[in-house]
Amino acid sequence: MKNTTEQPLTGGNANAGVVRAGDTVRRPAGPWTPSVHALLTHLHEAGYPAAPRPLGIDEQGREVLTFAPGATVWPERFPLMAPDERLARVARLIRDFHDAVAGFTPPPDARWNVLIPADGDEIIAHHDLAPWNLVIDDATDTWTFIDWDAAGPGTRLWDIAYAVRGFAPLSANAAYQRPDPDAAARLRLFADAYGLDDEADRRALVPLLGVRSRSMHDFLREQSRRGTLPWARLWEEGHGDAWRGDAEYAEERAELFTRALLG
Image (spheres, rainbow, N blue to C red):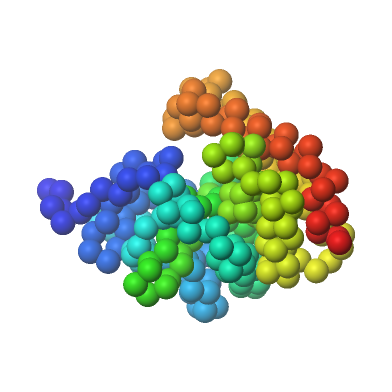
């Protein structure tokens, strides 16, 4: 019999079957769940505060995680990310995650839910560090990144390129697009707050902004061709065009962004 205290959690693109039960979240498990739980356990033991803690598997075979109180930033609360200090805080949280995960050794039989292969395997990356996966609890000033199911091999720059696109934002969408000097300044602020000090990394980040967004377009297009939900639905809703537009936006401003990062 279904637990009547369970509350379905909405939002996101692949949240079917995700519920809250008391102070926990129950989610459908997959072959990658043991590896993700090993990762989250490592982050907890390393003292990283911005990730849920795994609590095992319940009697229905679902993974159990600690519940992050608050609300996701996207879309209603996205304006609260506008102040520079909040953008800088996101960048520092991501740097702290990358530093913490650098000491993680995956299980020998690790399996990952790799949706889009990254450009390397320097770390186990989150792959979806975005406003829709950041929960903020105003009462306790707690910030938590959720939805770690797509974690897997990647690089710091791969995560950064995706994150700064969403949080700065660096977007062709007129509803979110900032004047070019402002967008470039926020890219610089993010890189500075993260501590991206190596000039070669700063140069490499600029083309990766377009590559990372275009990879999302290509992924949605392929999943639409296969009829795979929920990605096919997102393609039909125009998300592929949005990602392609953001890729072109970054590519057209490559010189401006490079000057901002190196100036």
